[in-house]
Image (tube, rainbow, N blue to C red):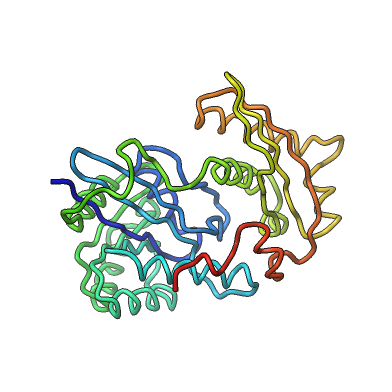
Amino acid sequence: MTRTAFISIVGRPNVGKSTLMNRMLGEKVAIVSSRPQTTRNRIAGILTKGEDQFVFIDTPGVHKAKTKLGEYMMKTVRSSVGSSDAVILIADAGYPAGEIEKSLIDRIRKLELPSILVLNKIDLVNREKLAQIITDYAALHEFDAVVPTCAENGKGVDEVLDEASKFLYESEWMFDEDSLTDQPERQIAAEIIREKILRTMSDEIPHGTAVVIEAFEENDDLLKIRAEIYCEKKSHKGILIGKNGETLKKICTYAREDMEAFFGIHVYLDVWVKVKERWRDDQLSLNSLGFRKEDIEN
């Protein structure tokens, strides 16, 4: 009998949600960056082992929304948790629970969802501090398991997977055996480009950028992709392109390397930069860029 479960991974920005999911899958599905608010949409990572299929849902980091995009991201988190069978709450092992963690615990408790507390980044914390953090969290909620991890190097990740397997129930699988994610190939390509922007650019610009794939055509041994990067200011466009186009070339080179590794085919990447002012706070712009709030379950 096959088993499955939808398990949401939630927490504050930049705490290691995407890194943890990628580690559990053994493949890179969600983009990773040291910058907060990297993930904007829910991303399903699918792991099939024997008769078991895990469907992990990577969610945006919980934060106080300041734009319509931020509101969309927070609605995505609420929807993902509400439609899950279980939750993995991931928190920084070096800090006690803050308002964000407490609000997520309240949501878990209200929905009566089984849950795992993952205390990440234990490589930066001594044993005494970790023990105190575990005690503090235990006073807040009775988790089904508490697992200290360092998702960056994989320590403790197998234990998280072992605990998550206890949430699986008998059911037909929702995805094919060889599925890795529910994201369409166009979206994967767009996210790869956005990751390279995050890793290449200065602090202000990356949060004001979005990537849209305008053309995605595979012929024999070549995948042709045309993408457009949208930014909010004309000055940002110049910075993204760089002197003699060097910055954009660097972003495209890094993106193409990752795409070829993921898709297993040579990639021709054609990228343009355009300005769409205040797109993060304009619902029509958000709709055109794929952030449609009506697509999120209430």
